[in-house]
Structures are given as structure tokens and as C-alpha cells.
Image 1: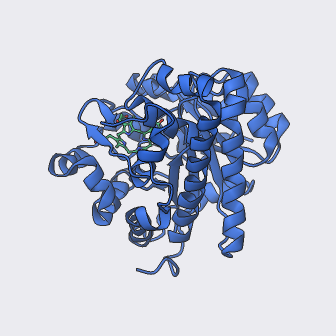
Image 2: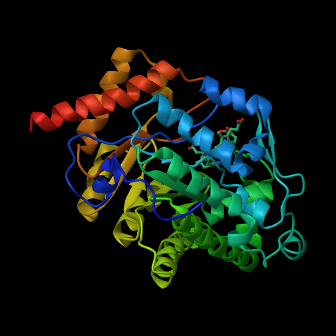
Image 3: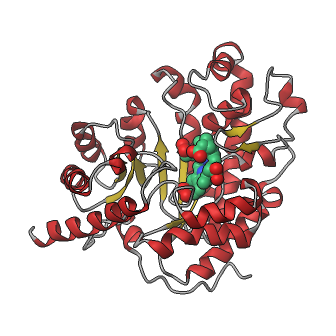
Length: 367
Ligand SMILES: Cc1c2[nH]c(c1CCC(=O)O)Cc1[nH]c(c(CCC(=O)O)c1C)Cc1[nH]c(c(CCC(=O)O)c1C)Cc1[nH]c(c(C)c1CCC(=O)O)C2
């Protein structure tokens, strides 16, 4: 299937927002919009394992389309996972029902870098199934809305590869940062280079926006963030643009989600390397205003507390109104502050999406 000649785009709201153009209503998509809160996803996941869905382009395409068939979303995000990169580098990853990801043989000591990961592997060969899923989905979407590609950032991937599963303290992974500094940088560099290639290949295959997930900043000190996360986030944003230019592929908007990195947001905004910064729900209105002051071309994304979707429709509407008043209706993409949870009501998700559209349209009219 060709990764050119895609159907024309009928809804380019998010792309216009990212270019700083004015829009009639605020666009919205939701992190983890494809997933277990949808009955149609549960049918597929009862028949196929999680990574089987990721690895089968027709299934990944189907699951990507499920939420955009049901709701008036302004973007689709390809169904995949950040942990396809450790797998591509040779590590085994299992998805355990109701628990999450598990690495049976995590990295324990720096010697494991020579035996448990294969640095000669290439994204273009190992992750072809992601690129095929993207090209197929872009054709099948038929221009309904843009398709987002994504990847995990180096520190988040490194922490999974060492912890082997979700952890509240991340103490095993942080031990590496404090006691094996050079080896930590070595691993982060391998991951950053692989991530650059994975994003470039997704864009070459048809992704129209990309998002980088640095989900594990909560356990970092500002100093650890500045040494082991920030430089790699910047290296990836630069590296992707350089490689796209070498291959004469047009660049696409770059979204960064550094969850809980409140101490790093100002440097990230000032760097000018990210078109969009996605915010979690802990960020205050005054920080939001100061980020806008620091970089006038920056688009912001976020940041409703996912648990607000448990509230009544009236309260949800109030939360949406407040969020739109803080962010404004321009240079802004509405989203949750993190992924949606499996027990959330489909009706409230629908109401969240529709409320963002309706209220922002009203606000624009009354300007
Ligand atoms: C840390 C992380 C992972 N994966 C991801 C992150 C970064 C975002 C974040 O911070 O949450 C990213 C991700 N994972 C998935 C997507 C798909 C696209 C989307 O709808 O947003 C995306 C963007 C599918 C998925 N990835 C996973 C599921 C659930 C699998 C299932 O049980 O069917 C889905 C739909 C499994 C997964 N994968 C991961 C975890 C921790 C889990 C289990 C816990 C959970 O479900 O929230 C790793």
C-alpha cells in the first residue's frame, strides 16, 4: 500500500492550531482513546492478545478507528505501545491482564547492556508492522481527521526496562542514574537514536502529527530531569527534523508530553523545539499563562483530570468551561491530563468531546 496519495483531509483543525492559525472551535482528542472503556475494543481484546493487535495492521487499524467512528474526535492515534521499542531491541515484554506490562528479564546491571539488548537492530526492519498499520489506517480514515503517531521517551523506556513493570518509586531505575551514570547515558543514547528513527518512519508511513511520551518524570528531581531526560527530549526533536529534511519528507507538528515535569516546563517551552506541550492536571492556571508568555508560538494541550469524567454532566460541563477559560480557544488542543481509565462511561466521554466543541464555539462567537 502506498504511503503517498492519501485521501484529502476533511478536518484539519488540529493542524491549523499547530500552525498558529485561528480556528472556529477547539479541537480535541483523548490519550488512550482506543481501549478498554469501549465495548467494541473489549470484543477484539477477548479474541487477540494485546501485542497481537499491535502487530497485525488490520487489527491495529480497526482499533484505531473505533473511537473516531463513535465520537466527533479531531484526531486518531495509531494503536500501538511505547514498549514496542524495548521489544524491537530484543527484550521480551508481556502484557498481563489487569496488571500491565511485564519484562520477564529486566536489565539488572550494566553488563546486561551487552547481552539483553541488540544495538544493531533497526526500527525500519523491526517495527515495519507499525508503519504498515499507519499507512493502512491513513487510507481507511479517508481524510476524516489527522492520524497521530507516537513513541515513548528514553527515560520512560529505560525505567520500564530496568524495573520490569510499573513501580511507584522507580528505585531500581534511579539506582542506575546515581551509580552507573555513564552506562545510563549509553542506554539513553541508544534509545534516543532508536526513537528518532521510529518517529521518522512513522511520519514517512503517513503519521501527520507525532507525540513523545515522557510519562515517568514524577520520580525525578529537577537535577535528574535536566541531566537524564531533557537533553534527550531535545535531541529527539532536533534529530527527527534533521532526518526528515535529509529524506526530503515534510515535517509534522511535534507534541511533547512530559508528565509531572512541572519543574522543566519553562525550559521545554523556551527551547522552541516542540510545537505543542501537553500538560497534566497538576499544572496551575498561572503556569499555563506564563508558558504562553515565554513562547508566543507554542500550542498547549491538556489537561482535564481524567477522573473528572466520573462527575455528572452538569459538573463536567462546568470543568470544561473553566478549562477553556484558562487555555483560551486558540493555540490550544483539548485533551485529558493523562490517559482515560477503563471504567469510564462512554456517554461521559461523548459529552466531554461535544462540550469542548460547543462551549468553545460559543466563546468564539461572543468574542
Ligand atoms: C506508559 C505507557 C505505556 N503505553 C503508553 C504509555 C505512555 C502514556 C502513559 O503514560 O500512559 C502509550 C500508549 N499505549 C496505548 C496507546 C494507544 C493509543 C491511544 O489510544 O492513546 C498509547 C499512546 C495502548 C494501550 N496500552 C495498554 C493498553 C491496555 C491493554 C489492554 O488491557 O487491553 C492500551 C489500550 C497497556 C499498557 N501499556 C503501558 C502500560 C503502563 C499499560 C497498562 C496499563 C494501562 O492499561 O493503562 C505502557
